[in-house]
Length: 160
Length: 295
Image 1: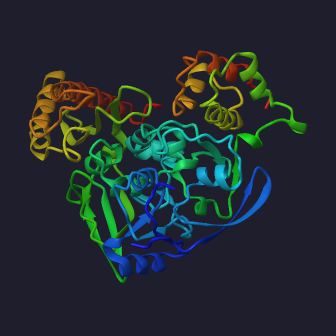
Image 2: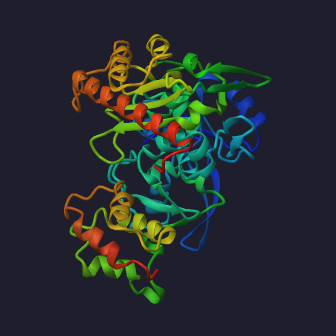
Image 3: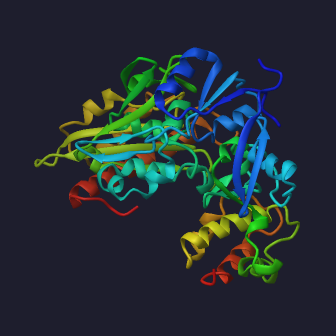
């Protein structure tokens, strides 16, 4: 059993910026984003794929960043919650809707919810309430009871 | 970092991957979707010395439907099965079962062959493989063998895969049974593990009697449960509610559901009985319509 593994090279895009790094193979994408790139908007709850707080987009696909090795992002494009804002530091329509509809309380699940919603609206700009509920079913929120989150996503429809 | 240290290899062709798996034998683990492997690494339930990442292999994400069969390669994600119109037509049970796996985040990444190789007793896809007579292709550096699904699943997280072997393909025969097939599941919440699930297909002849049947349960034992005896007894009989209930009872006689904190064994058996009858009734409907219902 190796004490420490040989580093592997990683070149990817994160929120549109090129990133080059040498990482330990066992480093998760979530830890890479948070600790190496200091993009701490991606949250870590369970670190075993259950809670959804660490959701990011990988080549446009919604994924759990705790269930990917950083090395697996090599050659790919990552979008985190820091990368879905509007121009000039403005909130996006979706983020504004979360604010307006009280779609968050403690905020811990919010990055996961936003990314799940972002992925849904990119694929399906006019989802039904049931489709919204299904799309965020992989993210656990312990404050809101979900209703305000669903309302926020419904309010953000169509303007993406 | 939660996993124990490991060396990381990312081969670009299958031969290279097989050589690496052969060289490191039981010390190596292949990584495809990683949706079960990564949690197991984080919990240190597995501590491989070498991880062989298959995600760069060329041409391994093919899901082929045609020429009398469905062929699934090592990098076909669950979501690809959910979205395949050809699969919904020819082997709807596979597309429907894939839609029950985890959440969208998991389905985008997790692979069909990974789920089969992982052999979780509550997993959906092993039941689909067993119910519809799939064959699995196990490759090793320089050789390969074909194992029927019923001989592949050996129990709790245990398969016929030997150290150094890689599951490179799963193929289902296409036909009336596959076209009529369906999948039913009950879980407490969206994305939870199945308390009980069933993959089932039923075909009746011109005389209205059952001519073909394939049924396998998930979550009802240490692996997929299929009763050849119960199926043989159903052949030639009319599929009334009574005969289907009798059939369900005969299948359940061979199941070994467990009590756990989510459900008692008795509750699981009752669920499975309802799911079997519901799935076979739906399958019958599909045959009658000569096509498939929209899931």
